[in-house]
Image (spheres, rainbow over the protein chains, first blue to last red):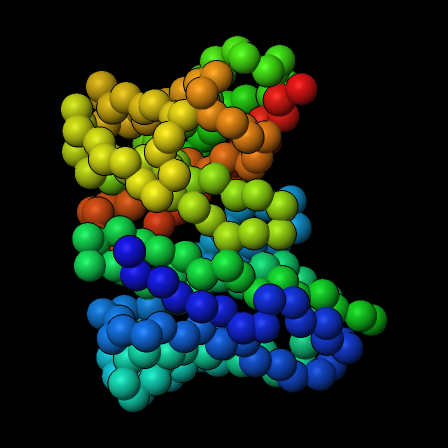
Length: 110
Length: 113
């Protein structure tokens, strides 16, 4: 099925810094979703992007869908300790199943 | 409360025993899923069901079985044929099956000793 690759696998951030995590595919995606999983918790839906070049913001989080709809990014500004967790992107494959990337595990240092 | 309820949250079993994980949802969702997550890794799809009395294998179905006799229930059995069953199991549901937002339960930790 569809594979989405996430980089980096780990992100160690100083509190207050910005960082970006990326999600890449070799094929055109119909849409992309982002989820966050806190340590010991379950994934929670953050946002869905559908249109080419789409940009959506949620407070300090900015999500972008590439023009070619083959990649997406999540940018977090002024990182806080509450941002700790693993961020997953997910895309619908040709069989209609949602395929998850391996995730970016974010650790925040106060 | 509306949502997805998984039980038990923690389960220990001896090697060679079958174990069934429960998943119930009251969201009136048609589609339900089971994912497996290993430490530090992503989510791998075990089985999914888009409608009652129908289900399909995901990417890692070997050693697992499911049933979907009721819309709200999608239990997963981890059989003795599953070679490495210790993992975190997540049940999820969505309104429809294709590209819709997935809502997850809180998960079940299975440890086989």
